[in-house]
Length: 127
Image 1 (tube, rainbow, N blue to C red):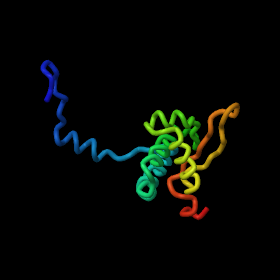
Image 2: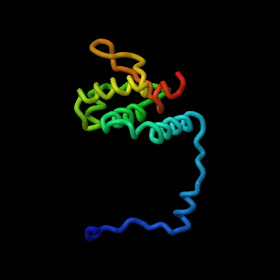
Image 3: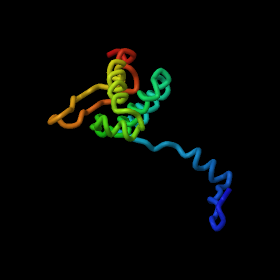
Image 4: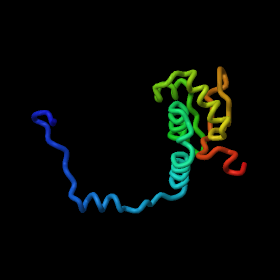
């Protein structure tokens, strides 16, 4: 129900919807690679993970720039609405499965950890 005094959202014609839906992707370079990584993760890996592991992977994927993500575990916990210790367990499990590589282990006076996310486990890629 729309509150009084508010205008309903504009409706699109069938032609406009079809034109927007058929528009081909113009993703190139890094953007194309990022979508390939996300698609691989969703299609082949995500179903085998716990909710917390998916949340942690998605946050790190979103934060990754130039192949790595520098995000504090406390920040991942806050944004994913999960416990800080659950984040630590999820990071370890993702690393054990080969879906995540810890590039730099952060900590007190060492800065924030850096992670590289992968769409497939390391063993399924032949590495």
